[in-house]
Image 1 (cartoon, helix red, strand yellow):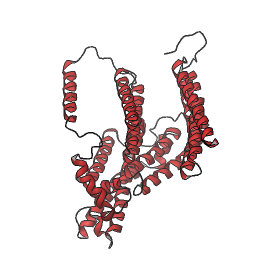
Image 2 (tube, chains in turn purple, cyan):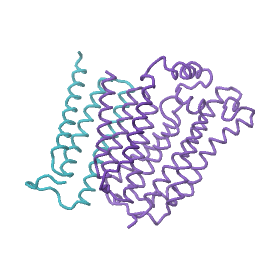
Image 3 (cartoon, chains in turn red, brown):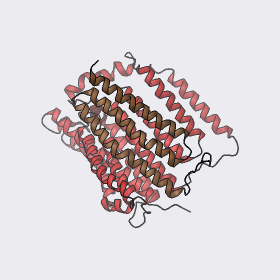
Image 4 (cartoon, helix red, strand yellow):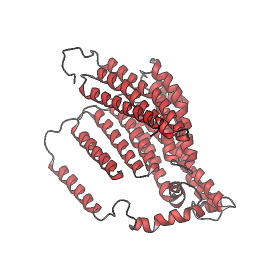
Amino acid sequence: MTDLVLAALFVMMIMTALAAIRLTDLFAVVIMFSIYSLLAASMFVVMDAVDVALTEAAVDAGIATILMLATLVLTDRWERPSARLRMVPLAVVCLTGAVLLYGTLDMPIFGDASSPANTHLATYYLTESPGEVGLPNVVTSVLASYRAYDTLGEVAVIFTAGVGVLALLGAARSGRGGAAPMRDNPVPRVIAKIMIPLIILFALYVQLHGDFGPGGGFQAGVIFAAAIILYAIVFGVDAAAQVIPPAGLKVMMTGGVLLFAGTGFVTMALGGAFLDYDVLVRDPLAGQHLGIVLVELGIGITVAAVVISVFLAFAGRRRAR
Amino acid sequence: MSILEVVSGVLMLAGALFVLTGSVGLLRLPDALTQVHAVGITDTLGVGLIILGLAIRAGPTLLALKLLLILAILVLTTPTTSHAIARAVSRYRSRPWKDGQGRAP
């Protein structure tokens, strides 16, 4: 049954991908990508990877779609038809695809219990993490404690992306934003006023409950940003920039990364290794929990600030014509 | 099979029928406004009925409460989305479809 559902989802994903290639209306292409991500998220749920599914749904199906639509507003909606078939790019793409397909031949089949990943590290994490980290959600222990270096790198990448966009486009300044056509429409206004507090509450839940259930800083940051972006869409970019001023967003962007890295330096100062939370408190398990909460908070703050700044930077610009 | 199971089955089947009707409308109706009309109504009702059926099946548990919360949020957001789409269409595409016009692009 599971295989059947997975196969159906997979066929639908291939169909949306093909549709995205065929379409020349870029608005429709963006929506196709959104559907594609939602199908991928459903696939992860079927595979019992709820943390990944939550990230995929929030980041790719949600925020990435909005950011791409915000980009389309600044550029053109229609793809320019290319006059001739370009042979070199086609050959490069086909060759890369063939190499990737060849590479998958050596991969163990899905759920293979005897694959190296499942016999060494995964078993270690599953058997040792209750005693070493003590969190019910093993995904969070792996992400924020065992592999905290990788996660710090990911947060640094997101921070760099945010800095890059702000350097290219400039932070949104008040008085520059376009009109908000929904502001004089009562229905979205009222519903947004009801929904925004609920979305922020849910973001806080995902942030603080990530130790026990699916969730964590990445998802929470994106969901929080979605609340602010909804506010900006309905009430205008200027109003959103008044709620969270761009200067504050810059402080949040850097503050989150500094909180993450700073936790590592504190553990070093206390005599442990970088990001070894055991030394934070007398009890190693409590130290692990405190460290993970701090690190996840850093992730959430940086992700939220970067996503909001990127959106405001795009939406605050007028169309270049 | 208890009565509740039959009730929830009927609700979910009716919901699936509504979703199917909406999908057929989305494919067959001529322009964006009529398509929103088809999907906007059937989607809220169809998905709502499916969630209600699932909540009955879940019994008096936390799961049922969560499903009802999802239902409440859907009842708020889905009609708002249809409304926003219809508003955007009427704002940026001046003439709605009239009978005998053929299919709009």
